[in-house]
Every structure is written in C-alpha cells, then in structure tokens.
Amino acid sequence: MLEALRELGRPGGLMDARDPLHEGPIRLITNPELSPNNVDNPFHTAGTTFLGQFIDHDFTFDLNSQLGVPTEPETSPNTRVPTLSLDSVYGGGPGANPELFDPGDRVKFRVESGGLFEDLPRRSDRVAIIADPRNDENLMIAGLHVAFLLAHNRAVDEARARGVPSNQVYNEAKRLVTWHYQWIILNEFLPQIIGFGLTQDILRHGRRHYRPAAGQHFMPVEFQGAVYRFGHSMVRPSYRANLAGDNGNPFFGFIFDPAGQGQSDPVDLRGRARARRRFIGWQTFFDFGDGEVRPNKRIDTRISTALFNLPLQAIATGDPPTALPQRNLLRHVTWSLPSGQAIANAMGIPVLGPDSFPELRQFNVGFDSSTPLWYYILKEAQVLGDGITLSGIGARIVGEVFIGLLQLDPSSYLASQPSWRPTFPRRTADRFTMVDLLTYARVDPASRRQ
Image (cartoon, rainbow, N blue to C red; front, side, top):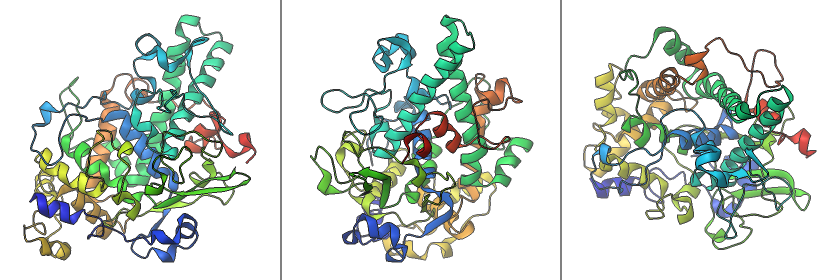
C-alpha cells in the first residue's frame, strides 16, 4: 500500500501534469497550450488558490503525526482553534504575543518593508514574526497575511476616530476585520469552490453530516487530512507576482524552483526572503476590472510539476518527501482514512465506480474500487464538475464544515448577528469581496500606482 501511494504521487508519475518547466515561468503563463494536462479554470482567479491556503492555515495545523505511520487522530491534535477567527493572524493577542505588535502602539500589528512595499516583520535571519510560520511559505500567502495586518491597523485608526474607548479599540478592530473575512468566505470563496446552489442549500436546509454536539465542534480528520487539500490541484506552476516591481518590469517566477535555494532574492516565489521586487501586485490574483487578472488551474487529478519538488523550508515539519502529492497520499495511511467510496456510501451520495478509475488498476492494490480520499474528491470534481468546482462528497464535506464552523462559533457574525452586513467601503453596495478588503488595506493597484 505505501509503495503504491508513493508511486501514484511520485515526480513524473500519474498525477504529474508534466508541465514543461524548461520553457520558463513567463511562457507557462502566456502560452497555456504548453500545459495540455494542466488546464486553466476560467471561473476562478489565481488568488482563489491562496485565499484557500490562508483559510486553511487559520483552522488546521498538525505538527505531530508522521507521514505513512498509522496514528490515532486524537494523538495528533489540531493546534489551531477550529474556527474561522483569524487565529493565524492574531495569535493570542497583544498580551500573549507582544512580539506581533508595534511597540509604539500595542494594539496595532508590526509591519515592515525593506522593499518597494510592505513586508512581514522579520528577524535578522529573515524568519517572519507571525502567529503561523506557514504564512510565509510563498510570496502570495505572505502578501495576504500582511494585508490583514494592515486592514487591522486601519480599523484601529477608524475605531479611535469614532470614539471607541481605548480599552475596547483592539477588540472592536479585530471583530470587524474577522467578520468581513467571514463574510468573504461565506459569500465569495465558498460559492466559488462548491457552487452557489449547494452553499445556499446548506444554509437554508441545514447540515446533514457535520453535526457535532453543542460546544464540541471539531475539525474532521477527513477534511483536514484529505478533502481540503483539493486546493493543491489549483496551483499554477508559475505566476506573475507583480507588474512593475522588477526594475520597472514584471516579476515572474515559478511557485518553487530548486535554483532559488540559498538565494537572498530567490528566482522563485518562495517565502522567507526580502527584496525590492518581492511583493504582490494583486491585479494578477483578483479582478480589479483592469484586464490583468489571471486564472488558476482546474480541480482535477493533475498537479503542477513544480509541486513535486518542494523546498524543505516550505514543509512545516521540515522533512521529506518533497513531492506534495506523495505527502498528501501518505496521510491516508497516517490517519487510516476511509476510501472515497466508503465515505460516499456512508453519506448516501452516488459513488464513482471502478470504471471511473481505470488508470489506478496498474497499481494492483484495488485503488479503482477503494480509492484514496484525496484522489477520489479530485476525480469527482474532474468528472462531475468539469474541474470548475468540487462535486459529490468533496463539495458536501467542505460546505458543511465551513458553514458548521461559523454556525457553531458564538463569536462569528453568522451565529451572533446573522443580519449583519459589511461596513468597510466596497465597490458594490450589496457585495464585499477580497478586492474590497485589499483596497481597504491599501495594497490595491490604485494605492500603489502600479
């Protein structure tokens, strides 16, 4: 079993999209025909991928389990609070984590630069001073994190201007930023990932499967260990980080490139570095209406080739294997996850039969009829949703967990004040999106004049 999982997820194997990396990061973006196995998703922008990663870091973190070694989930606790409360940004607050905050204004976050624009605060060895070190894995996730720091700092200024008592300013700013973030998840991100119809069905008719007892909500191991890792299929091999940051030229780079190892200003988009060009021009990642936005990849069983050779610094535990698909598949053994077919049967959702997985018969371990959950939900999206959204059990699990976490958290806007509507400035009266949040944080193209 272990050998079959490693073979399924190996570099050059069945899941490798075989992107021609030798063509370079620019051509892989401007000439999508070079990657016929790695098709663009015209309904998602490139930022959808990294918003999803940012959200994941907000409610899951496992540093204890060993890949491929069967482990009781209870012995590998999720070290993140299972709520959508920006735990990865706020940490324990100014009292518990003073290192995250400005010494001159203890309710505002530290924000540094060192380049053309903002950067995470860093130690002398370039390690980011943030509540979750994974938010410095790549340039995009670091950029999102610092955008939330800046949004909080602006919310502090506005709370003070409204006359909020000084001892309530931090909590008020945190509440507003968190509620706007939750609004984006429920009204923008989730409909993109599982579809508007299913999102509304769960909200209106309730959750069928994720129904923990009051006050005992938890992170299902199937969600954390497999299903929510669908986002790895959406990652492009390369991105345009910004339009004019590289001596007036665009900065293109692979998401990860072995050539970047040890470089002070890496050629790729890995994190833990600081240089003038290392910032995100968000018009590539979210639609500001200027024609510059780029798509992500479809949700399917083909993974961008650049993810088969991760730098160890991008792995929270710092240990191999470095092929991301192998890591995902070995987690099925770690936590003894049921197959996709077993879960579909238990949920009463139509099962993909062996004929949907002819490519898995070569491994001679029964994967076509008892398929690793991660692979199964990717194939569901591919054959039922054309790679645009999750489908079947993948969509239902993601939707119920997200909505359940919000409904079961008494501090969320959905549980405490469901009629609440965003108050930050927005482009459209009845909507608030990531474009609006980035504009509020003043990291948008107009604020930067780039």
